[in-house]
Amino acid sequence: MDVDKATAVISAAGIELTDRRRNGTDDGWSLSFSNGAVLEIRDNGEVSASGKGAEAVRGLLGLPK
Image (cartoon, rainbow, N blue to C red; front, side, top):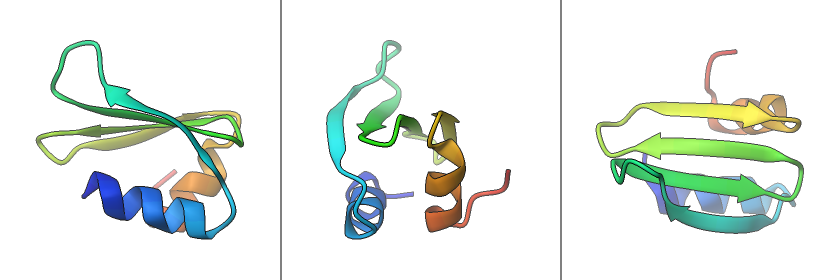
């Protein structure tokens, strides 16, 4: 999944991006959103969502629960 596309989809739903940085192992991106969700997008294509708003973010991106 493309980081910029994921950010655009989530932001278009009214959930603000609050932080974007490379993750601790430098193999992907960690995106934090105003609803409490944290989205991890690895360079190999793996995507995971965690945090208080994770369910909303998963739904917007069509990710499994």
